Length: 296
Image 1 (tube, helix red, strand yellow):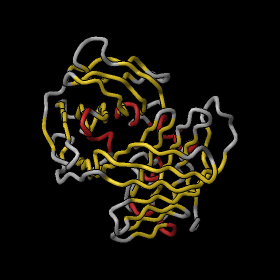
Image 2 (cartoon, helix red, strand yellow):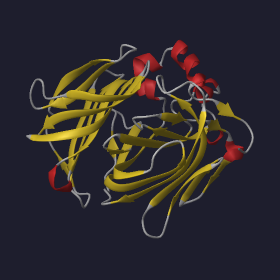
Image 3 (cartoon, rainbow, N blue to C red):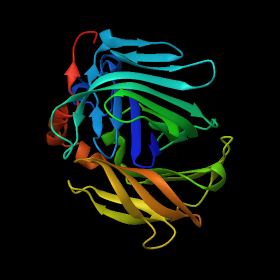
Image 4 (tube, rainbow, N blue to C red):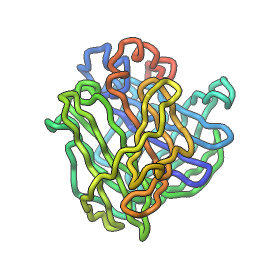
């Protein structure tokens, strides 16, 4: 994830896509046959969103590279991560309704790397590694929007069961603090009825400090009724600045808050496992997540 003023981008590489209805309907037997590289460009003028699922014939991966059809991620000798992408993207409401191509390169260079992996549920079935809490990012688009530079973030999640099996919901946020530090907040309600909370203050060199999680403050409900919470020191300190995604089970937004006596602008997400578990919701997903056969 990355932001810079009027622009933001998220990239997610999926193997056995947790949000894939095709993977769910297949019985989740072959994760390599359900892969995708999701690219979301949130320019103020024309946001674009691409997530085409492909099968194992389109997958090539090694220790340092991951390719799905025309798009790929690779680590280089300087410690940078480069994404080259060429995808058909769907527009957002208000930005026109015709699909369009997005093509370009995104390069992320971590400022520091952490060495700690966290359980985000109550039984160790879902794990999370905040690899690079802070990074430099360069977005160079050949087609589909403006080019820009900003600050970014890199993490990894993996699990051994569907998300909706482990979680009723979660709220997550990542923002920059003073002196190059990063705040990351995880507040998860597990299906078992327990709650998992993580509040991390991470230094530039990747050193992780655990802190108290501020109180959850409501950000209101999205268009589809998903209730969103951001943590803040005091009532009124959490404000939604810009909605990026607003769906029936997932929202993403830029928010402002005050945590640990510091102002912070953060990328925020809410996931509703209760909503995602519904068959009707999964049946809607192919309109945003088409599946393509063959190598391309």
